[in-house]
Amino acid sequence: IDSLADMDSLPKGCVTIPVEGATFALPLAEIIDVGEEKARLEKSLAKLDKEIAGLNGRLKNPNFAANAPEEVVAEAQDNLAAREDEAGKLREALARLAELG
Image (cartoon, rainbow, N blue to C red; front, side):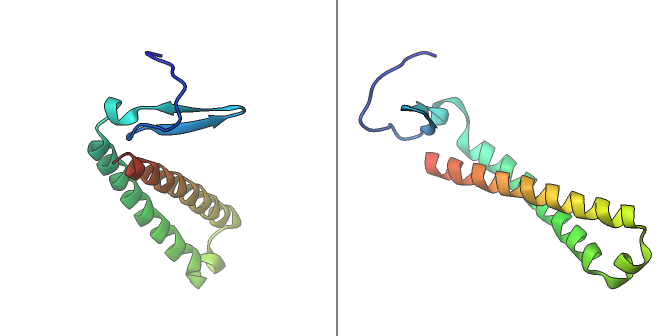
């Protein structure tokens, strides 16, 4: 920690971390290249969206559900849930980065 100050307003480019009794602000815009980080997250999100579409297509295919072993169907469902959760987290991270500028 370089500095600690009591402030009424937050400087631009900060991300906030609320904790009981206080809110801390980290000046991420000064630490990371926001544009580069957005591009990295968008690329990861595009890849995940493609995987999600493929898993959705497979699970919605009546032949897959009818012919695949239960374990394979369950694994595809688990993979879909995990990918959707990860995509949601990436979208949240992108929204936070958008606030930085």
